[in-house]
Image (tube, rainbow, N blue to C red; front, side, top):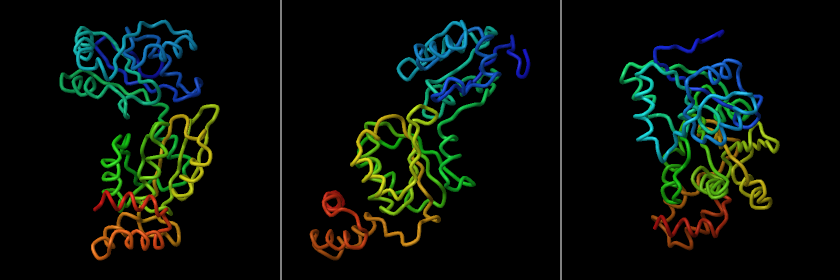
Length: 283
């Protein structure tokens, strides 16, 4: 076998798999998946389809969020006996908002060899096409599901001097973009990368306020899996309006709520009804 050989001394191979297009898998990854003793997969059905597509018949076990604690001990036992194991997620590179971290950390603690088999990553694919600076970026995984926690997270990142990267689901992408418009300002550039490498792949890079309007007008564009990339505070478009939250907080300290909302709408360009709801929360 060429490249990185599968060892008989107990090796965990962390294998990246396609995020959509079945052809996006390396020759090395296919070799490892064929020759390991078994594969620990986030979803055995999804990984099974990938294996069948490439004529691979290696045994599969599940390792996902709901069984990770107990299954990790079993995998560690096999590794300590000398087994070679491949860890894969549903799609892309394991551990990036996917299961596997406890297993990798435990292997490191026990002196079990861990080998990377790099390949597809939605994070890196989106960064490569967004047209935003990539000399410094920070990946924040999925934003909090609860609206208040999500807004607090975004508010804490409003002045970050680097590109921000988030994953988001179809169920919350529109609300997340609305919160970004409120916290970062409607003119902050955001790149929405949807269904990367798949049939309906789409990459939109616009002021976040315009992205919200597009998705509200075309709700079918809220379907799929998303990577959201936010321009840094140091890289704003010309004429960027102040962030609505910051304006509201200042105005609410000096003015009645309705007057503060009216002025904030004029200053930021954000919708008055949304500013009113946000003002009630801040009050």
